Length: 161
Image (cartoon, rainbow, N blue to C red; front, side, top):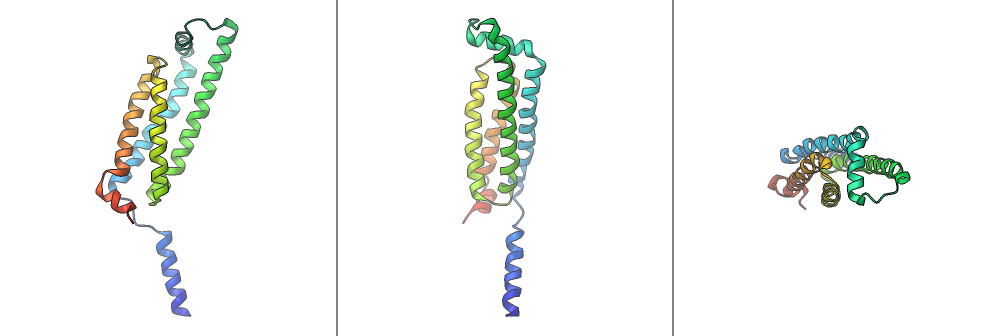
């Protein structure tokens, strides 16, 4: 009995402490930190540069927006950006530690998130030049992070069967 409990304790200890993530995968943290900074900065810039945001909204609507709706659309756009980006930050903060612990489902989920986020950021890019400073580096980071999740052989071995 004692040898069984020793074996079980040894087995449980190994399960709690997975091998360290490969160096290539640890670079993912740098990309995520940079992405989070950009995700937080964009709504802040939208709040600060409301005149630029208002111009982008007017350009998008062709100037046909009723004046009494302009302020409402401006506020709704900022609230939408804040909520969406906070959800993005929460997803990244939840998924990345799981990826670093070797959870393959988290790697797949993070990859899907990065693809979807890149797709929708292209929509932001079409809404006016005021968003390009955030969209371009964010999309580059997304592509690099997807590469880090799948290309290095050390990472493939880490998630391998």
